[in-house]
Amino acid sequence: MVIRDARFICSNTQVALCPEPTRPEYAFIGRSNVGKSSLINMLTGRSGLAKTSSLPGKTQLINHFLINDEWYLVDLPGYGYARVSKESRANWGKMIRAYLAKRENLTCVFVLIDSRLEPQAVDLEFLTMLGEMGVPFVLVFTKADKQSGSRTAHNVQTFLAKMRETWDELPRHFITSATGRTGRTGRDEVLAFIGEVNGQVQEAEGNA
Ligand code: GTP
Ligand code: MG
Image (cartoon, rainbow, N blue to C red; front, side, top):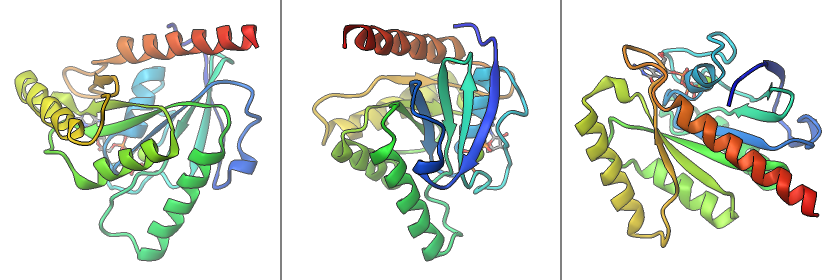
């Protein structure tokens, strides 16, 4: 897929205030600092589109970007940051759950996993919640430039093996790097996937 146009539309905390649900939507979520905003910039080829920071907790709102006037890309605030209050964690949970449950055009969630780490309980718990809610998702293993390819492959397999303990079917997964010497790793694969799914949505709408 060629990105001809990528523009910021709006930020808010409520599903009711999100743009009209008239286009397929792909949301990016994962632990704080895992690289959601960086991945969005890498995919769109616009380095300052989504705000990034080396400090966790940068993204606080539901941020909508319109791509090629065709589909929405959503940057969500991360979970699992230890230094947030109980109250703001509860607010995050409420906002995200409402978004996931009510956003009718939500087509697929990209769950970002840090490729350097052993399987993390917060990630596995979040996936369980998506499963219980029946939200379609794929996995993205980020920051692959931080270690060797064989280490990344090992960590990915360990994560999938852990999932296999509770899931019958495993989701599709991608390996990415948004910065560094191997920057743009996984870009073509993720964009091709979105293009493919957009085609399926269009076809389903044509048949409806
Ligand atoms: P929150 O909005 O705080 O939840 O974080 P986020 O998941 O949006 O992460 P963000 O994109 O802001 O990136 C966090 C830090 O990780 C920044 O310092 C990025 O430069 C760095 N980073 C993100 N992706 C990569 C990557 O692929 N490789 C490397 N080496 N660093 C990355
Ligand atoms: Mg962010």
